[in-house]
Length: 150
Ligand SMILES: [Zn+2]
Image (cartoon, rainbow, N blue to C red; front, side, top):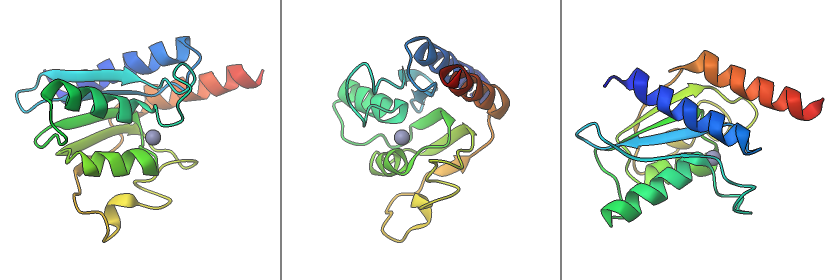
Protein backbone atom coordinates (compact mmCIF):
# COMPACT_ATOMS: atom_id res chain seq x y z
CA UNK A 1 0.00 0.00 0.00
CA UNK A 2 1.20 3.51 -0.70
CA UNK A 3 0.56 6.55 1.46
CA UNK A 4 -1.87 7.73 -1.18
CA UNK A 5 -4.23 4.87 -0.42
CA UNK A 6 -4.10 5.62 3.32
CA UNK A 7 -5.21 9.15 2.57
CA UNK A 8 -8.00 7.74 0.41
CA UNK A 9 -9.16 5.76 3.44
CA UNK A 10 -8.99 8.90 5.59
CA UNK A 11 -11.09 10.66 2.93
CA UNK A 12 -13.68 7.88 3.15
CA UNK A 13 -13.86 8.51 6.90
CA UNK A 14 -14.28 12.23 6.23
CA UNK A 15 -17.16 11.52 3.84
CA UNK A 16 -18.78 9.25 6.42
CA UNK A 17 -18.44 12.05 9.00
CA UNK A 18 -20.18 14.47 6.64
CA UNK A 19 -23.01 11.96 6.20
CA UNK A 20 -23.44 11.96 10.01
CA UNK A 21 -23.62 15.77 10.03
CA UNK A 22 -20.12 16.12 11.44
CA UNK A 23 -17.37 18.36 10.10
CA UNK A 24 -15.85 16.16 7.38
CA UNK A 25 -12.41 15.28 8.68
CA UNK A 26 -11.07 11.73 8.66
CA UNK A 27 -7.92 10.15 10.07
CA UNK A 28 -6.03 6.85 9.96
CA UNK A 29 -3.12 5.51 12.02
CA UNK A 30 -0.74 3.05 10.39
CA UNK A 31 1.65 0.84 12.35
CA UNK A 32 5.34 0.25 11.48
CA UNK A 33 4.35 -2.71 9.28
CA UNK A 34 1.92 -0.62 7.26
CA UNK A 35 -1.20 -2.02 8.91
CA UNK A 36 -4.09 0.27 9.74
CA UNK A 37 -4.63 0.19 13.50
CA UNK A 38 -7.32 2.86 13.80
CA UNK A 39 -9.55 4.95 11.60
CA UNK A 40 -12.17 7.56 12.46
CA UNK A 41 -13.97 10.68 11.41
CA UNK A 42 -15.03 13.58 13.61
CA UNK A 43 -17.70 12.64 16.19
CA UNK A 44 -18.01 15.82 18.26
CA UNK A 45 -21.78 16.07 17.77
CA UNK A 46 -22.53 12.39 18.14
CA UNK A 47 -20.49 12.06 21.34
CA UNK A 48 -21.25 15.56 22.65
CA UNK A 49 -17.51 15.90 23.02
CA UNK A 50 -15.62 18.92 21.71
CA UNK A 51 -12.39 16.91 21.79
CA UNK A 52 -13.73 14.12 19.55
CA UNK A 53 -11.72 15.21 16.52
CA UNK A 54 -10.69 12.45 14.11
CA UNK A 55 -7.03 12.63 15.18
CA UNK A 56 -7.83 12.32 18.90
CA UNK A 57 -10.20 9.41 18.22
CA UNK A 58 -7.63 7.44 16.22
CA UNK A 59 -4.91 8.07 18.80
CA UNK A 60 -7.23 6.85 21.58
CA UNK A 61 -8.25 3.79 19.60
CA UNK A 62 -4.70 2.85 18.59
CA UNK A 63 -3.37 3.31 22.13
CA UNK A 64 -6.22 1.26 23.58
CA UNK A 65 -5.58 -1.52 21.07
CA UNK A 66 -1.87 -1.57 21.83
CA UNK A 67 -2.38 -0.96 25.53
CA UNK A 68 0.24 1.78 25.26
CA UNK A 69 0.28 5.51 25.94
CA UNK A 70 2.56 6.26 23.00
CA UNK A 71 2.69 5.24 19.36
CA UNK A 72 6.33 5.45 18.29
CA UNK A 73 6.98 4.47 14.67
CA UNK A 74 3.31 4.95 13.82
CA UNK A 75 2.15 7.35 11.13
CA UNK A 76 -1.03 9.43 11.15
CA UNK A 77 -2.92 10.49 8.04
CA UNK A 78 -5.57 13.18 8.34
CA UNK A 79 -7.52 14.99 5.65
CA UNK A 80 -7.14 18.45 7.21
CA UNK A 81 -4.33 20.28 8.96
CA UNK A 82 -4.59 19.40 12.66
CA UNK A 83 -5.82 22.04 15.09
CA UNK A 84 -3.59 23.02 18.04
CA UNK A 85 -5.25 20.44 20.31
CA UNK A 86 -4.70 17.60 17.86
CA UNK A 87 -1.17 18.69 16.98
CA UNK A 88 -0.36 18.55 20.70
CA UNK A 89 -1.98 15.12 21.03
CA UNK A 90 0.06 13.92 18.02
CA UNK A 91 3.23 15.11 19.74
CA UNK A 92 2.26 13.47 23.05
CA UNK A 93 1.54 10.21 21.21
CA UNK A 94 5.05 10.31 19.64
CA UNK A 95 3.64 9.84 16.15
CA UNK A 96 6.51 9.37 13.68
CA UNK A 97 5.09 11.00 10.57
CA UNK A 98 2.09 13.23 10.05
CA UNK A 99 0.54 13.39 6.60
CA UNK A 100 -2.26 15.85 6.09
CA UNK A 101 -4.39 17.08 3.20
CA UNK A 102 -5.79 20.59 3.08
CA UNK A 103 -4.25 23.34 5.18
CA UNK A 104 -6.63 25.09 7.55
CA UNK A 105 -6.09 28.85 7.76
CA UNK A 106 -9.05 29.17 10.13
CA UNK A 107 -8.21 26.60 12.80
CA UNK A 108 -4.91 24.94 11.89
CA UNK A 109 -2.13 24.71 14.41
CA UNK A 110 0.75 23.24 12.40
CA UNK A 111 1.55 25.57 9.50
CA UNK A 112 -0.18 28.59 10.98
CA UNK A 113 -1.54 29.97 14.20
CA UNK A 114 0.37 28.54 17.17
CA UNK A 115 2.60 26.30 14.98
CA UNK A 116 2.71 23.77 17.79
CA UNK A 117 5.65 21.74 16.46
CA UNK A 118 7.89 24.82 16.30
CA UNK A 119 7.51 25.62 19.99
CA UNK A 120 10.33 24.78 22.36
CA UNK A 121 7.75 23.30 24.76
CA UNK A 122 6.93 20.68 22.12
CA UNK A 123 9.16 17.73 22.99
CA UNK A 124 8.42 15.45 20.08
CA UNK A 125 8.10 16.70 16.54
CA UNK A 126 6.82 14.34 13.85
CA UNK A 127 7.98 14.53 10.28
CA UNK A 128 5.26 16.53 8.53
CA UNK A 129 4.08 16.04 4.95
CA UNK A 130 1.35 18.42 3.87
CA UNK A 131 -0.83 18.74 0.79
CA UNK A 132 -1.42 14.97 0.44
CA UNK A 133 -4.84 14.56 -1.18
CA UNK A 134 -5.44 18.23 -0.61
CA UNK A 135 -7.96 18.88 -3.39
CA UNK A 136 -10.61 16.27 -2.46
CA UNK A 137 -10.28 17.13 1.23
CA UNK A 138 -10.75 20.85 0.61
CA UNK A 139 -13.67 20.20 -1.78
CA UNK A 140 -15.40 18.04 0.84
CA UNK A 141 -15.13 20.73 3.50
CA UNK A 142 -16.24 23.43 1.11
CA UNK A 143 -19.38 21.59 0.03
CA UNK A 144 -20.19 20.62 3.63
CA UNK A 145 -20.11 24.21 4.84
CA UNK A 146 -21.88 25.49 1.71
CA UNK A 147 -24.75 23.08 2.34
CA UNK A 148 -25.02 24.09 5.97
CA UNK A 149 -25.21 27.76 5.07
CA UNK A 150 -27.89 27.31 2.43
ZN1 LIG B 1 -8.33 18.84 16.13
